[in-house]
Length: 216
Image (cartoon, rainbow, N blue to C red; front, side, top):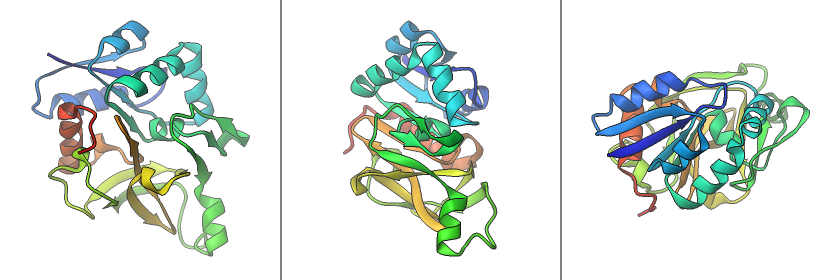
């Protein structure tokens, strides 16, 4: 059976993610766990997150899961969600600056700084919260059956700026254009919450449950 591990590092909407995956109609054993061995034995791994990046990275390191994530990123399909996406990058400006996992090159920046620079800060609120259109930047197995420009649900004050354009798998606009999804090889991550995004969010999770880690 398809074994899926949802990483539990002490924060995040883990059970809502688990329920969404269970409702995808794919036969899978869904486990929420902080056990490194169970994560290593899984066929696929989901790395969700909400809250502050310092707490996220600290929780991972305290449990030894930062190293497990590095192993997973080399060997099997990995899906990051929201703060889980941001943690995959090299550095975040949140909490006065935090070094992240460095699995993908790029930075995490603060919306309010960008909005002030573009003059958009007077009429756009932070956090960016609610439904927004996501524009795919290229074909990927996780976009199968999902229309370009469809809406997903966001809640975030910081956004990812990948160091290489080809890492971006989708864009979204909120005063500035930012990466709504990034990916490389068997790693894919989204800034929005698929579990809160109704039909298209469940479609993305279902695609992940079928994904073998190849990009074509």
